[in-house]
Amino acid sequence: MHFMHKYTYLINGVYLLTETPRPNLKEVDLPCNIFKDHISIITSYIRWSDDGQTIGHSLHIQESEIVARAKREGFKIVVSFIEEAKSAYHIPAQKRIQMQNMKNFILNNENVSAVIFYEESRVTRLIEDFVLYVLGPIKEVRPNFKVYSTKIDGEWNENNPYVQARLSFAHEESVEKSRRAYDYHTSVVNSSTPERPGSRNPYGYSLTTKDNTIETNENKSIVILIFYLYSYGYSDRKIANLLNEAEIPPPSMDAKGWSDSTVRYILNNRWYIGDLAWFTRTSFENSKKKPEEEIFLFKNHHEPLIGANLWNTTQFFRNYKQNKDHMDSPFILRDLIYCNDCKEKLITKNSTPAKSKKKYMYYCCPSCKKKISTDKIHESIFADFSLRWGRELKYYEKQTERILNRWKKGLEQKINDLNENLEKLKYLLSTLDKNNEYYQELKEIFEMQIHSTSKELQEYHNTREQIDLLSKDEMQSELIGRFKQDIHSYSNEEKRAIFLLAIEKIGINFSKDNHIRIDYRLTPYVEIEDLMKQLDIESA
Ligand SMILES: [Zn+2]
Image (cartoon, rainbow, N blue to C red; front, side, top):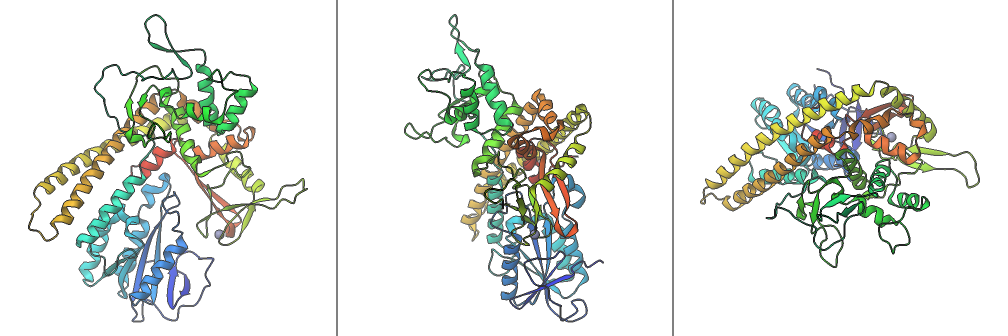
């Protein structure tokens, strides 16, 4: 077998062996032969991803925690395996490759007597496979093989109720994380023709005088324009300014002009996709929006102005910008670009002197401190981007259609599995033995699992419905068509918006002539695509 771990570091008296360099540590020589000498070794498994799930858990922190724990358990050598969560493109071929490598390493080296996970919730989706296909075969030849987790004292044992409880919490957690904007509760209130109680008509609509029904009016194109501008990265304030400059009268007669909150109100209003939403305020005094599942919703209540694609895109940007993203900043690749060696997100640095005409702006790795000028990297990205979208639009439309269909099938499979699972859980709960010493804990675990499974089911149903709406909506080709136009012709916020929809991440290899690798998204439906990836639903 190939043993690729050629880097050795010494941390607090423990040797850490890695496949790739750790720039913030100093390399040392290993004073023994890990295959020939008689020495106790532990492997570590970290699932590392940069999709936002691991904020506050940088690779360095995870490895330090693992080394500290290994030391407590009496180990002097840790061999580190890092599973990088790949973009959807790469999942099928490289899935769990490091898990497999680790298994081979353990089976081929009798010195390995244990494995340690960083917080087993990070491997939850793999845990059943791990127990069946990895731990099982290892324990057959090495019955005393031990498993540890940084989050559990003592040994990790898959049959221990506490471990099981933690696993279901982890499950709950991951379900919580995958909640999306479309995770709304579709309570149906007993009324055949619901009306909007005591409020005036939304901007763009009016009541007909003859039969008191609602219809769109001459302002509808303004509503569409607002959504359109937002989907191109413009802020609420910029949109308000544009409307004021164009002297378009604001919705309220007595207002001085458009304000960012008026624009935001329109952009957040489900009315424009044809739904009637009630009770969207937390209380009369508190205008903070309620969580989506507490809103009563009547779907397809009236003629929509905004299609699924435009709505989906604007909602994505609204959620995205909650962490105060300035779309018009010249650092159009921030949060998308990583250092390949350190696995760190690059930070932005503007070193332009006060009166200088020439700009000195960089993306910079916080760990190894290497940097690249924005102009240089932007040009390479623009070139690659233009090359990628060279084909006929029809080609991309067909491809998107294929992917959406694949996702739908995958979701249907998940829905069937979950339904079966739910039945099984309900059955197990009903047959639980009250005299079992863990009765109370087990009962709670089952109830919790039933609850989270039902929520998950609801989410999958909603997503499937979303996908249906997206593929029927004509705006799809307009959205994809944006990628094909000359990227140079867009403003900063427009470029930023386009890249956020088209690119998952960019890796730069400072040690290899600044070589870049771009992981493109499969579709412009970022949140759905991330969910599919999380669910391991394959796209091709
Ligand atoms: Zn670096």
